[in-house]
Image (cartoon, rainbow, N blue to C red):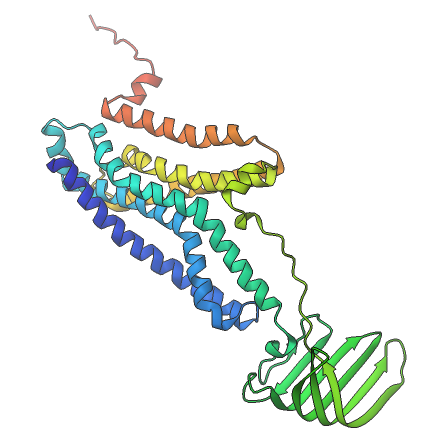
Length: 367
């Protein structure tokens, strides 16, 4: 029908435009943050693109939910402000008849959001965690950045190597400060290279000097050497326990602890929000020529932030045992659906809230 196809086409155009803008903003913010982490040595600079991609997949359910909400509000605002709503209502349509085209457009997106938040979200977080752990397990040589002081994997040594690249396995003007086995030492050498001795890597230094002092004593031992070896190949012991965001959804359901229920409430909350928000948009959007679309968009942003913050609060409250999982899900999402449905029903039937709340006082006839 013309009515349904017209609404769906405009929703698709607005949703596409909103999604592109939202993705661009989020990607820009993520690039700045992730590049900062790469500069600080938290992540591998060569894996920045992978981390950006996995992070974007993790944020996509929230972005799509908000884009769907804004697209619905924008479409309805345009229909109101250009008096198209009057035409549809005059032709026999009602406000509730907009539910069919909106839901027919939204349900594939809701299904995608559910798959993303229940399946892709934990997978992307697990992949990011694996990349971080693999970077933390790298050896001391891979940690060395030419021209910069770099801490070793176990935190007991600080390296400085003046060389053109890490891959050539050789360097010049090497400095090592160490604090191990109750001694502080500083070692400098003109050149050095990597050798494999008994399946362990050593940095073999040539033509250098070493200062050593026992902690708690004032005596300093100074020695010169032609060749000196320092082991550098130890890996970091990284905690392999998955974070809550990385645990698969089926595992959360199979082990219903408070922490798992809190994480599950957040994932299901995003999916239920994608279902409720288009109905809320239809219920709250109205025409106000004085403020134009900005008033509806401001109200939509306010409603989304309240809803999203309650989803995050539910995660914390369920984890701490303040509320029960089923009760909170029913009150928040069931209450949002019921409130939007009642508001939509009232607007569709032209209910006057003031007449329902304030009793009418009969007028006295004047003789």
